[in-house]
Image (cartoon, rainbow, N blue to C red; front, side, top):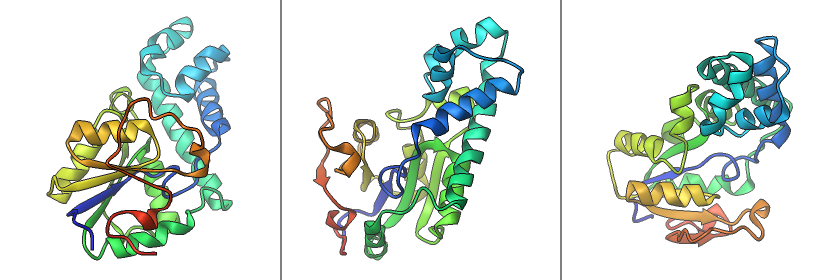
Length: 220
């Protein structure tokens, strides 16, 4: 049994395998194409990787509103990832079974930097709805993108839903560790295969594990 009242998880790279980078570039190109625009590569990259500080400059040459472009980008990214799920992609990691034992002693939540529609699609596709008391992805707006981790905004919302600050946030990125620290909760960094040689750049997680089964209170 875990000593935490709640355990909150990142999604991509923690519970399910990450989407290929081409998904996000395709979504960005399709977003511009919805406005009959053939964007420069650097403007595609700005929206592919949600570089909020570059949105205005990326839209200015085409006289587009960043809010309109990001709304298209988010909708198309979610649609592409739903298709990937339907084709058997974004598979669960084998150790996700460990969440069942965690759920015996703590309420579980999910907070992702992916858009909320994709979080909902992943939860539905993998039948995870009964595991999580709350789940958040980002809103499909410029403000929503700006609040992605390491901003703790969505983690704070999940913690409020779960009714506790005695919580652990589990992720596979330095921004996950930073978001947990900003929210004042413990963190666990999962060393997935795609993080071989990864630099935490000074972020110090409370726990470091190689499998979800090694989280405090979990069992295989």
